[in-house]
Image 1: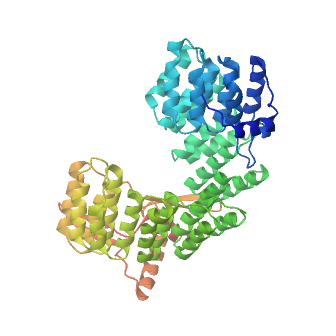
Image 2: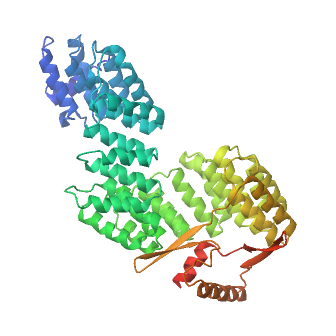
Image 3: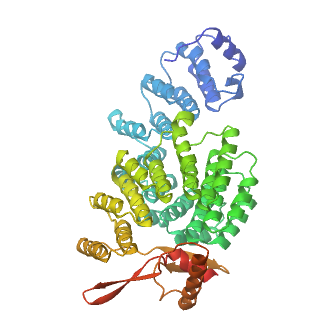
Length: 553
């Protein structure tokens, strides 16, 4: 039990009007006090606005040696509301017979404080105590499965829902839609969604978000269009998902329309939407719009600052990205690991190698952010772009990474070695990548192109044969450009299917000649290999981005 603290308790009791309460006050009085604490009455706050309900509880809890469940539930809810989960759990353990509300309140508290595993443990204790979960309890357990990524338990809960007669409950159905959508089980999510007789804004938002996060922006936008015909009001969560869908498809015109709806719905000040808008305008080629969104924000949060820094880095505006970082620090906003990824990315594309190394060194020393695999990979890319391959190679060898992080690290080094024709480093990186069973088509293509770029045709043929032996195929890169609200899609090397392909290639060759005339060294747009008596076209340099830009010009 939470103990009292002398004079502090007396002062707090005076504030909330409970001083002088008799020891023998009945349970009803304590229940009313519990309601006050649950609602976060301002009188239960200290001088600095901090919630201090535990001090009030400490003063009168000993007077009720055996808690009434209703009284305790209000207290648990109060502790949960203010993220005092340890106190809530301690009180829960003192209840002789906790009921379904007790369990649900504490489970919710653990979900909110990022301990969904504890929420699931509590749910597992209910049958042994003879407590039957209600729809809110089941929905809370499903949310916990979603947070912890436990698909198996979530599916079992779905079975419980079907057999327990909760299938038509809107709270449970909404939770299941969100669970399947976050787990990327979109077919199952859509079945649950379509089976709801009266969906709410949460279920619609969960389904739209699921499509957007899985890269199916078209379905997200179509579903949102259907939502607009309903008598429901979009919340910030749904609007940010639609903005992200527009970003994934490069739909600038539609994105601007959604931005207008954000303003009309009074969600412009929401940091999640602001970050999504900055990202959307950035991906759609309108950094100036992204900057305008940022400049209208009075007190940018970490999310917003990070979004604009990453955006500036993507556009090669290294100085602006670093200036924004300095502004962020001056305003007392502490950077996180994503912020530093943007900063290092800016240094990489701006050629600021030593500056970038300085930021890497300062991450933990000044800001308490421990560099991770992605940060080191970015630095390896930075060193590689600057031609400091030996230093990049040494860093790659000394970093302890596994799995996909290791794959990305050595793929990055391989790409850098190709650019600078360092076949020795490329060979070492290639050997490391061969150890992976995942699709490494991009790495193999980089190895092949490295050999081709220096005229090592035999080595290129060997890589090609290895790819064919392992059944590895490289999916061509994809880019698009929107002209008069019509998106045009382009794939790397696919000149024949490119709109006005001959004109685009003629323009690109003309630009290449002009660039070389100004001292820029480019790779030839076409190389050829001879294999089994056939002349094979090897496209080097004709990326999907080049085709899109050429078409736009």
